[in-house]
Every structure is written in structure tokens, then in C-alpha cells.
Image (cartoon, rainbow, N blue to C red; front, side):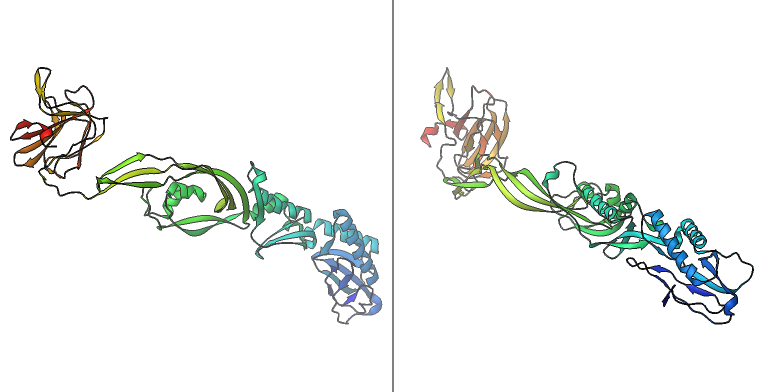
Length: 463
């Protein structure tokens, strides 16, 4: 390995010289292999660059000066350092009829040949390497930085930018100076497009509570029709099961951008159920005395996204804006008696007696009228079997009759709702209907009768 300043040619033989530029010192180095076959005095040198003839010179000193001059001219023209890729060939030949060039003529010919053939040399550029796999080359470090910054910026929302905590590229990224052919150097936009190219990656997703196919497709940026093609066993109206696995084809980018964003939102606080116990009510008794109300809380969270797709939400803080109001349900604890007659009777509803058994308004009133609000629960006065539950055209409205055996039957009339069916056995105190004002009635109340062998009895004699 010698420089052009050495005496390298003494005899006639073709010589191949590889030319390189050392970046800082710009030393031109030549590899030479020579066989001595020619006569020293008659030797001239043919110069070739790649497959192009450059010219002929008397001695090697001219070649060294001309190559350096050509390189200097091209670097000035391009505004950047270059590295000659093609081999500079020097052929010692016997002097024949050739126009010999001086160093200036040779330099100009070399310069014009290089300028016209961009694949003969490389220029200084900048390489972006992603995970030691994907590579793009751009003009300079500034362009390389802009490419990466604009890729990151493309995943920042246009609104509420102040909430962004972090924007980063997940893969390892290196930016290094590199010599490259002009044809391999990309513009900023070309490099961005290359790095943002995607391939499809198969992913298995496990169904969570509340998931729908439409929501899954939307969250993963694929069409519902495509999701169904990937999972032919599914239909749009399928009932999904928690834990069920489905196939997804997720776009996979060469560059993955992670964003972390602070978000504040409100969400409901579930209302709890509070039970109160009443020893005077049977175990089948239940009454919601307070419907309750959901509370409201303010949540501050960090949302992490990969290429715009939500990956996770981390709750940072919660602030209660409105406390929830519990649902309150009263339940009975009293043991339900056997569903048979006991022989004694109890008042079927709580209320005010507005009319008693006996003569009334020129007729005979065959029971008790007990006023109570519409919907008040009516319970069986004693255990027995329901023998009638329905509408009565004789003025009773919605009517329930319970047979207690030994000829005793109780009537419950003017109800707004019937809660038992014919043939059903009921226990003493079991709810059978709700107070109303159906049939011949002047207001919400229960008309209650006790009959023995079909004859009305004074309820006071049994209560």
C-alpha cells in the first residue's frame, strides 16, 4: 500500500488502483500490483475510471495531482465530502499515438466523468437505523432528527397537547454519519413514509366483560367485516363469552411510538345496597324504602398508547364529587308459618276503618272497609287456599278469596293488583294483593269479609 507520491510504475503492465478518501486528512491511497514486462523509457499510463477512459499521461505524479484536483472540484460543487466507489485503473502501455494530458486536463476529465456518473462515488449523509434492521439514509443530521420528530408528532393529538407527558420511540434508534450513493438518499418525507410502513401481525384477544365485536374492531383500527372474516365462527349478533379468544390482524409498524397522556374524566360511583331487618315481617317480605342514587367522582389517569392504540390506563388520583346514596331494602326475618289455617285471624292491612259490618245507607254492609294508600300490601288473614283471584263484575273489582276450611272463606276486594293464583296455598300474613279502588269504590281501601258457609260474619268477632 503506497501513496501516489511513490515510484510505482517502472514497466508495462495494467494496474488496478482502488481510490478512497480518509475523511479528515484526505489522503489518497492506491493498491497496486505490477508485473514488469515493459521498457521503462517508452511507457505511458492509461487512466480509466470504472468503464470510462479518462486519458493518458507521462507519469504517476500527474495522476496523483489530477485525482486530488477532481475530488476537490466535485466536493466544492456538491458542498459535501465524497468517497470514490469505482476503481481507478492505471494501465502502463508502450508509448504509441495517444494524446497525453497534463494534470489539469486529466483532473477536468475525471471531474466531469464523476459528475455524470453518480454511482461512481458516495457522498456524506446520515443513516437512521431502527432495531439494527430497518435503515433509511437522509442528507444530514438535521433531516434525520426531523424525520424522527415528525413521526413522533404524528401521534400527538391536535387538542390538549399540554396533557402529553411523554412521546418516545420504543425501538432502539441510532443516527450515524455514513457515505452513500445519491440514489440511496431519501428526502425527509420519503424516509418518514418508509419508516411508517406497516405489516400485519396476528394477535389473539381474550374477550372481557362488556366487549362487543364493533368496539373490538374500532379499538384495533380494523373493519368489522375484516374481523368477522378472521373469525368465521362469529356473527355480528353473537353473544360473546368472557375469556373467549378471537383472532385479530394488527397493523405492525417498523417504528412504534409510545405516548403518555394525562386525562381527567368523571365516572359514576356505584350505589351500594343496604339491608334493614324487620322482625315483624315474614322472610318472604321485601320492601325497597330508598331507591338510592349513584355518586360521582373525578378521575385523573395516565393513558398509554402505542401508535395511537390504547394500551393501558393507570389511575393517578380520584376525587369524590358527590357521595352515592345507598339503596335501602327492608326484609323480614319472621319465620313463615305453615300454609294452612290456624283458626284465628289477623287484620289483613294497616289502615283506618272507615265502614264497619252492619246496616249502611239503607243496605247491609257485609264486611269492613279499611282505608290505605294505593299499593299498600294486603296479607292473608289466615292460612288457606286461594279459590278466586280475578275481576268480579258484582262491584268487588279485583277480588281474592281464600278458603280456610270448615266453611270459612275470606274476601279481599277493590284491589289494584293481585299477587296470587287460584289453587295457591298461602300462609297467615303472606302478601296476596295490593290496595286499590277498583269496582264500586269511592277511594283506595280494602273491603274485607269473613264468611262461614257462605254467610257474612262480623270480622270483629274473629279478629
